Image 1 (cartoon, one colour):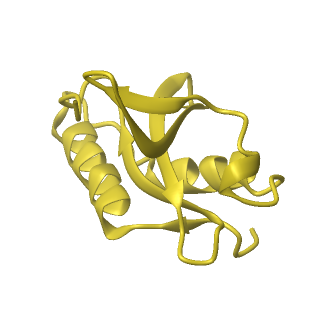
Image 2 (spheres, helix red, strand yellow):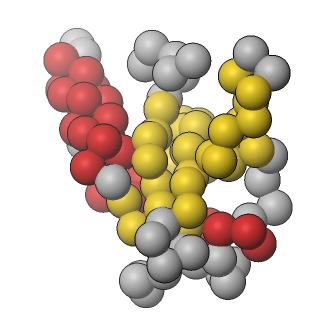
Length: 105
């Protein structure tokens, strides 16, 4: 895995919370965080920078935000990934949501 894609602490916390929820299930499900991080990096790394990402820009109540949204499937689970422009113009993963987590907007 290269270094083009960075992850904010908020995104990693989203995955930690998801893993905690998976462990609380009966029977407990194994953590999935590392696989999700690798899958996201593989999906985003081929692009030269944030502006090259072919994903839709997020708008909330008609206001366009400097965030793009993409979907990543891991173990037949679909995660919504919110990507911003990092300081160097590269993609930076800001938040990661699973459908069972509360929506951000």
